[in-house]
Each structure stands twice: as C-alpha cells, then as structure tokens.
Image (cartoon, rainbow, N blue to C red; front, side):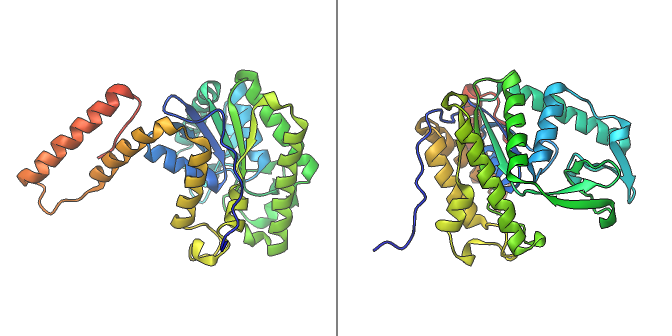
Length: 320
C-alpha cells in the first residue's frame, strides 16, 4: 500500500563534498539548508545581506557584488533611529550609518570572492510580488516598516522573472563559468499577499525557472531542486508546519534536507559529516558538574577529535 507520493530526484553529477565552496542566496529555503551546511562545517557563505525574497533583489545584489558597485551614503536612510538600506534585509540595519555602510560593502567583497570560487550556487526564489519605491520606482528588497503609501505593489510577470534570472546567470558566468547553479522555489507560503495571490506568485516563479532552463543549453550547468514540490506532495499535512501554518517545521526541514543531501551531497562526505555531528553534539552537551574528572576527560577527547578534523580541513571552526 502506498501512503505517499514521492517526487522523483536524479542524483547530481557534480556532488557537494568538503572540497566544495558554496554560495547560497534568496528566501527561507536558503536559510534552512544553509544552516545545515554550516552545522556540518562545509565551506559556505549564505545571504550576506540577509534574506532576499524576490528575483529582482537577488539580481541587484549579485550584479553589485560582481561589478563592485559600492554602497554610498545616498544608498542608506534613517528611520526610527536606525539606518537602513532598501537593497538589504532589516537584519543589517544599524544605529550607525558608518557601520551599516561598512557591513554592506564588506558583504559585496565577500560575495564577489565566494562567487568567483564557488563550485555550487543555490538560489531560492520566494515570491514574485515586489514593492517599488514611489520616489525612485525601483523594487526594494525590504520595506523596513516604512508607511505603505511610500510603495506600490506589483506582481512580476513570468517574462520579467525570466529576464531577471538570465541576467543573474550571465553575471555569475562573467567570473565563474563552471559552478553548478541550483534553483529552488521556497516552500513558504506568502499568505499576507493573499491565498490566490500566493499561488499566482509561485506559478510565475516556477514557470520562469522552467523556461530559463529549457532555453539554456545543457552545458550551462543549471539545475532545479523541487523543495516546494516535496513540501506540497510528500509532506501534505499541517503537522509539517510551524504554529503559523505557513513555515515548514523542523521535521519538514530535516526531511527536505535529507532529500537534498541524497541527491547532491557526495557519499564520501558522509563519514566526515558524522564526525562533525559527533563534535557538535559534544559541544552542546551541558554537564551536571563541569569540574568533574569525567567531564574533563570528555573535553580532552572532544578537543582531540576537533584537532584531527581541523588538520585535514583547516577551514572548520567549532564554537564551544
């Protein structure tokens, strides 16, 4: 008896291992999967200026990074005693104008370096709805809770998204011809836009990604991972959502991660992942008596395991 439909996945040829360099950008899938890669100590950089929900925001940041168009004072503004940038998430906002600009421009430099060396680039699209600044008529990455009257809301057409994705790919290929680019659509429903409006948005994103991949020759190394489809078809039950009934919960995230890992992570990396996980669990352990001889021996053994891994993988950084 079959009690579940399974989305078919093909094993990737260009698998991710500990020699790989990853860059992840976009909506919530990037945050969830990116945290998994960070936990297992892969070489990653994710969302350097915070979550970016729509294709135009991703396109803008990648172009700025590759062209090194630095952020200037005219790119930031003060609101509610903090400085913000319409091109970045509010998580980067800061009481100091100088610190905000410094962090934004550091993100540009780090992103350029990571993109240039990346073996795998994961881009997650969250929504086709964009907010345009009334004054500039440019789409913003984040409204920073400014009054709604300062923005107009528009749905990007399939064709507009296609063109945006093509520009993203073209910009990446200027500095990196060989990286595997993996597109995903975020499983998170944007119900604040409306139930029907969310479906229209996801439909435009899915259609645009499909058309770009159809129009691109196979040697361009473009891929699609069906995170949204797995959530809808394999996990079609509200027990896989958080209390808001919108975001996937830990069980769903772990399930989608396992599906992604089986398709994209090299088998030879699994033994290292197990060793890393053992250390991570050890570091999170809280003893009843920190001064006990037993705990000191445990810490010594844990430190030896860390040193063994760091000798082979110097980039790993374990936090106590």
